Structure formats: structure tokens, C-alpha cells
Figure 1 (tube, rainbow, N blue to C red):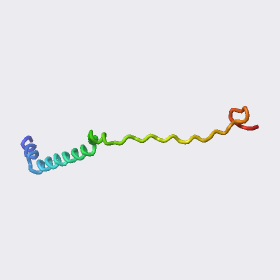
Figure 2: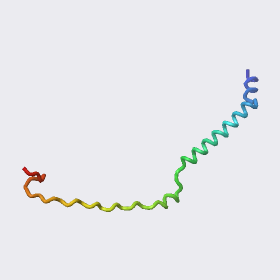
Figure 3: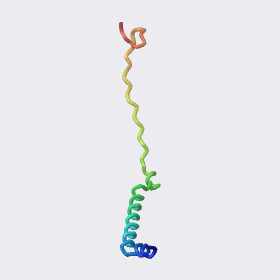
Figure 4: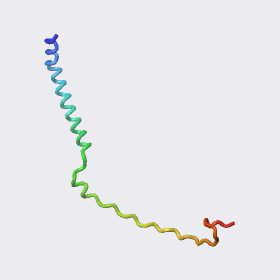
Length: 74
């Protein structure tokens, strides 16, 4: 039984498939690392600061003629 298992593991098909899988997974992990890598340090220095928003114009308030807090007429 052990002799048969050794022959199967050392056959050229098993060795070829193992090598192909190792190359494939190495390539997949390399591409994944490229897409998941953090930004370079120099990139963050080139970001322009955000511009401050201009204050919006406030609508003119209507003068209240009665003592009602809501400015409603009866």
C-alpha cells in the first residue's frame, strides 16, 4: 500500500498539477496584494486641502407686528 501511494505521489501528473497550482496561487495572491495595497506615503502629501464653504446669505427677517411669538394674525 505504501509503495502504491509513493508511486502516485511521485508520478509526473501529480507533480505537474502541484507545480501549476503553486504558480497559479502565487499569481493570484500577487495580484490581490497589488489591488489591496495601501497608498504610497508621498501620495497623501499631494492632496489639496478642501476649500471652505462660503457663508450662505440669510433671508431677511420679516418684522413681527404683533405680540404673537409665531407672527400669526388672528
